Length: 138
Image 1: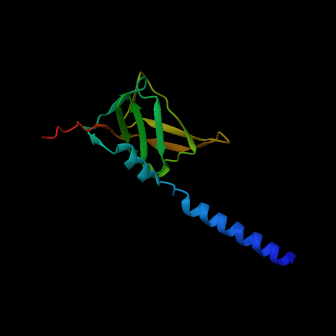
Image 2: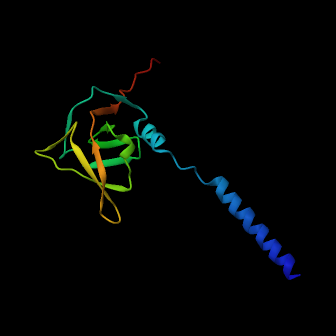
Image 3: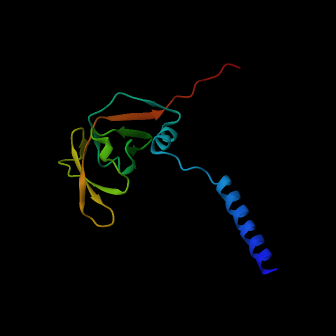
């Protein structure tokens, strides 16, 4: 009798676990996250620098790029050594003035141990703005 109850409980647990695994949303890859962020936006002409005052909101996408938000514009930077880009690291910048520019070197530090993990060479910043709405004829 105890064995049947144990088997029934184990079966119920497997079914419940399987049902939640099926209904859970799959985690987006860093590239899929970027695609979702840029959905409905159009790229503009790349710029060499962005203001550090206006672009404090930053998202690091592992091995894909860094997205800076400035008002309604998203600036995407794809560093030259993109394989070093890791969202678990803290990015430490030393700016001279009020801009973050192409070829600036950003040092990375481990989030938990605070030891240096490397550096990233920034590339151009590509602005993405929302695409203008197209008027439809009625």
